[in-house]
Image (cartoon, rainbow, N blue to C red):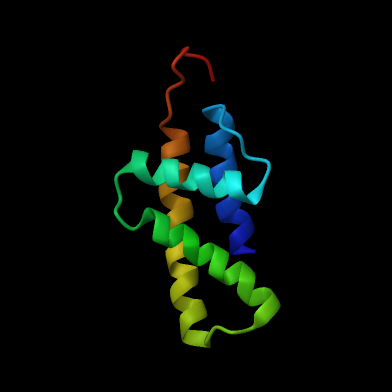
Length: 95
């Protein structure tokens, strides 16, 4: 379920900034834009960990240690992006 948290927080930013976000490709594009905007060098790799967890649901290829490590990185991603959402100022000064 961490994939859902990561994807939805990316979609929240995308909606705020009027970026396309309906398809997986658009969500990844938005995540890359967020990575460039919030200033943490590991932001995009943390998002990719969410995708790895999502794929693991179907393939079961990750070790337990790998899953735990990825979970921590995805939680960090979600928290950082949530801070960005909470601190966002619309260019039109509208919510």
